[in-house]
Image (tube, rainbow, N blue to C red):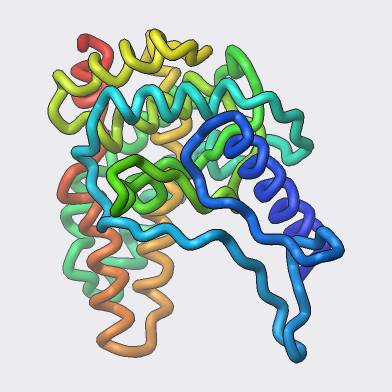
Length: 262
């Protein structure tokens, strides 16, 4: 594993430990007796976390609990060195979207027309990217429903800190609104609970949605790329499902305006 990837894993673990110490519900990091994160077990490199029994991903988690959890994460006193990443901030670009649709049509992808119909909206959303962050601190940067779940003991649990790094907490809060605010009334509850718990971010402008816009766009491109390079029907079906997850409920300017209104 390259040194920079190891450094990012180490920092993610450090942030997770700081979050746990600050009262954020997350599994404990298990280190070796020498304090190392990664251990060599018979030639296999492994790392461990404390066990937590979890329910399946659920975007309808309690809005108040969720807002408080994210506020707690954003209040963790942790000075990390993992910097900004274009995955969370840079546009795909109109030329690349057009090129991708052309490649998919040439390969008769069953979702090519749907992506093409959405392409003007994807390009328009990218006008919200490129502005300077209002604040920077180490954030989780991957607070989708896969990584924030209800534990079997009843509380929430956040895990998978591997992508942690500098980001604008307001933009991460906007990502949470996108993922968990399908019912617009929930968005207001999440924001209020977050603010009451001392969270520093505020979602006030469309540009605050830069992180989910960029991240979802890059995830969509990656799903299409994997479909194009798949060599089996199973792989193509799997990646088509990944793409359709976005196409079935896309992030649009209208969605953002609704989330801001509430």
